[in-house]
Image (cartoon, rainbow, N blue to C red):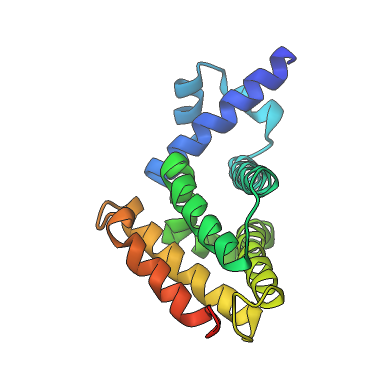
Length: 199
């Protein structure tokens, strides 16, 4: 990997950590420069502004998360759509633990305040959520085809289940409640909403 790309990746990683821990407004380019050991000018060479760097951080998180899901789904075979949904839920909870700092980017309120006035920020956040909800919806469609799930509005149920799972992740992220302590109840709730009466 070229040295400039290595530096760029290091800047992205450290910016992710600082934006997650301290927020956008309380993180300066100087903070990132000090943490990475590169000059302010080097950061501005790769990213023309702090806003551009923040958007790159969001895009990088989106790509890593969606790539992780894609690899997981490609490397696992599920007997039914219900099995797939449960697998997706488990994997999402695992990624929330593995990528905890990055998930702060989704859970800090003031990033949505930024997004309200910044179409590019809004687009990145929307694409992250849309991509994840689409995976949940795909599992429901498969479940309806194999009859492991009853006929429901797949789009609305996917949205509802995702918000339920993500809500638990938020509690876990802020150390208010452990996600694994309520995992069985979460799966039972999803089955109650979706499981076909023939199963």
